[in-house]
Image (cartoon, rainbow, N blue to C red):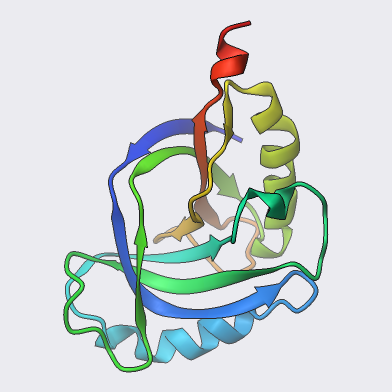
Length: 166
């Protein structure tokens, strides 16, 4: 999987969110509630969809617990936080460093890509995980659960100073 490091500016999104866990996955539910109303979002910046996970803290990744909850978003990027449709909210993703991976394959298999990133790539890189939202950008090459589908996986990182000194 090819990757690059990006220093992202703040990203402003408008969309819908739900609290869920891996054991109680409501991803399909959040997208089904978002898609019929996406056209109501004003000030869109592009046509890409953002699938975002907001974790309470980095402890989420310390030990596997399928019951541990996080917030999942279905959203679009906007230029302004104005005219937000009823039943939608604004999410600000702070500026920061991201490892960006180009994923090609079925969306039902994306967990394998995340396992590789978190368990192989990250520990062998000069970076550590940062406590900001994780997200995927699904553009024109995204085709739901198609083996030819493409999306970008954005993982928040920070420089691992102790590793850089060795």
